[in-house]
Amino acid sequence: MAEPPPYDVLIIGGGPAGLSAALNLGRSMARVLVADADRPRNAATLNSHGFLTRDGVPPHELRRLAREELAAYPTVEVRSRFRVSSLTRAEAGFTAAIGRREPTEVVSARSVLLATGLRETLPDVPNLRGFYGMSLFSCAACDAWELRGRRLALIGESADLADRARLIARWTESLTVFTNGADAVTTAEEAELTAVGVAVERHPITELIGDRGRLEAVRLGEDRTIALDGGFVRPEWEADLSFLHGFSPDVDGAGHLLTDRSGRTAVPGLYAAGDVAAPGPQQLIVAAGAGARVAAVIVHDTIGVATAH
Image (cartoon, rainbow, N blue to C red; front, side):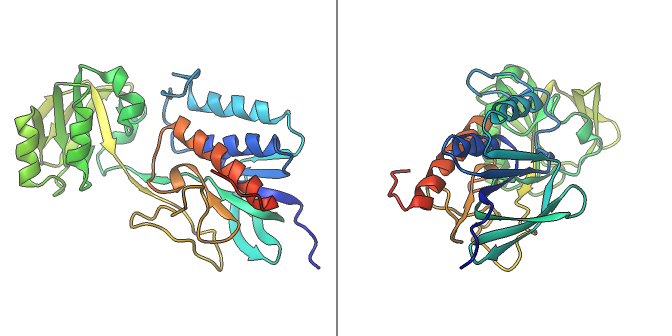
């Protein structure tokens, strides 16, 4: 008979979903290892919003507070700047090769929770990174309140750009959509946006103008500029599942992991929570809630107790 794995749950990812799951699993007496590569998607963001009692807290501070709380639970181990280079199925669960730069050890766990978030690719716009997280953001629900009533941009090249423009228009009467030369907005959508006061610019962006992260204008061509006070970008997101070896959980058309309503993937013992699971990017508080929910499901599944989660 195979020896039981040293960990009940391996959590891959140390963002709100993973840390929230670790907290609730620790409180359930589970032996937990959190492997956190410590490369969060919101690293460029100065302040996060919408998290009850922590509105406006820097994301790194939220993570620090969470890790500080986890230190009170002796069955929870957090390894920072540790990445999982491979995850394989084993007789009694899963084995993972982990390490800082290169794998230095193999650990085993009965169950695995993927809370890795998403890999983000920004539109191909010169010097966009210099403004991202300071005056250009990707989440309207997270950051539009601070930009309300100002002259805003929406920069993107995806087919859902018009829908995002309708959402952002809740916070401003001066919104310009920049497709950066892509065929991202149909003629019919442009007519609908124009009717509600949203402008559409289809020319490629040659430069973002501003100082110390504060956007002041967008330059189109050589000499045409549009004055702005900030805005939003629509990145492309994808889940990095390259470390899964020998098995492939189901994903949706966008590459996000498909789960049931309780966070179970199609692979027994493999769960997912947060941005990596469909429908994709969410607010921090939503990801934290998903982590707590899946933690309860894992505990119930482990002992074979029916759950309403």
